[in-house]
Length: 113
Ligand code: 5GP
Ligand code: ZN
Image (cartoon, rainbow, N blue to C red; front, top):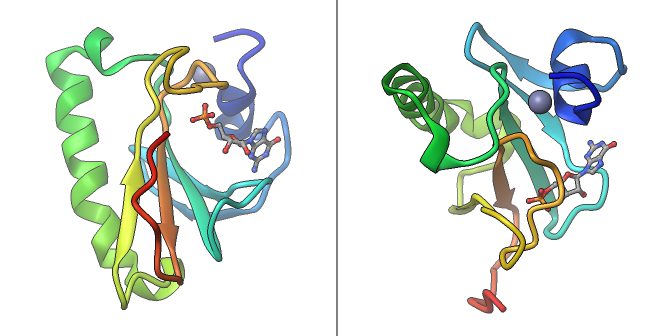
């Protein structure tokens, strides 16, 4: 997808430190962390919304969700963690390429608004 920041991170056109990569996705550090540790799991394929996923995309997302807890050391998940997927304007989705926020390393309030 042209002019998509996360596609450019995936392709390497824009440089960023990838803390993990496999055939399905990359994980990078969020530039504006909302918790002590804040990572972004970004599928390599561009799509914006869960509602747009093909069967194959949903299988990919399933593998991504299964892989995240295996990376406990890298992502500091040992004491628990939170996953967030913002969808659309009301949720404040700013990058139109689906991504899973991974928050860890501290006690978190439950304050979705
Ligand atoms: P959203 O608001 O779409 O759910 O999440 C987008 C996230 O991307 C935000 O948490 C924001 O801080 C992060 N972000 C935006 N631009 C950059 C960037 O250039 N590099 C990195 N590492 N993260 C970014
Ligand atoms: Zn993209």
